[in-house]
Image (cartoon, rainbow, N blue to C red; front, side, top):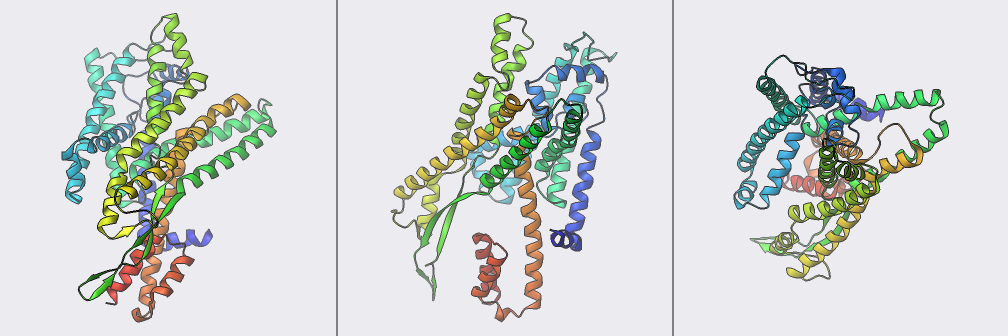
Length: 467
């Protein structure tokens, strides 16, 4: 570990990228403490403390508390995430967007532009809804949240402009991190917003143990369960089902190609964190709406849809399964995969090319998706199980844990890829090219834990350079 850290800071470009990323994250956390004008912070905090289980608390978790304080970054990057998901879903529906996605960099730039426009539109709508809602809200003691002396429309316009500008700036920050820093910028902003609450939870737990409110044994048991859950998440997020693929030999000109063995990697959790995000958002709306309706039977229904209740847990797990299969179906096309394999002379041993291959891949993918959805449901319901068993004073697990682990793994993989690229360049400079045989490269790749696709890339590079 120490050698890896030393190698990271020995490479000037990587060191600059890491420092730039940390600086941008510092800007993000600094803006999360600049309040929006015309708001009573104490009354807003008291209001949010009374909104347990609502969609406000759900989104506040991703903004690092910026929404609860209604700062300039109150909306965070959630409008961008929502716009990206909407555009991705529309790509599978509208042929025009599908053609753009296949046009390379030019098409992706247009889709990125549409995503930015969608982000601004969603920010304006959400900012206006928040401004209107704040005017009718008050703290549990009756103290109004809005203290501005401006007219209602002036306050709404100021709030919309402030929150929309904050989201646009965060979108720019995320793109700068992706281009000039390390890791995916938008994901890192969400990551920073979630992990910022970990130190406070640890300090609060220690205080409860000192005050004899929480048993040390319970804290140890919960800590062990956390380690097990984190291990399960890491294992599931990095696990693949490898379907063997054999390529037939073919002649092109005077050279023989093919005859190689490869595999088709199918991820267990293809949908990622999309299913729990969609399910949480949909189920949080009724709890939020019923909180403003003073009708006994409506509030009774809303109370059963709060996180941790039996009805909520059942519907939450059911929606996770639905969105896992739905999102996998629109992002992974077994028929297209089978056609590409057949086009390049590939086949799965024991399976006929074409329709039978598509049916086999779809069967394997359906089984993996069912397992992935089960894993997502267990991890997302784990916090409520902890609350029921140990009555712990902090939130652990769920969508936040999936995002933190996923972003952390992606960041580590990018750093390792950067280091391996630097090591490979140095290896090429110090060694004569005629001595780089494929067998030696395979041994070196195995020692460095190369993925097979990476090895094939390096092997092809060696062949091109020595042809």
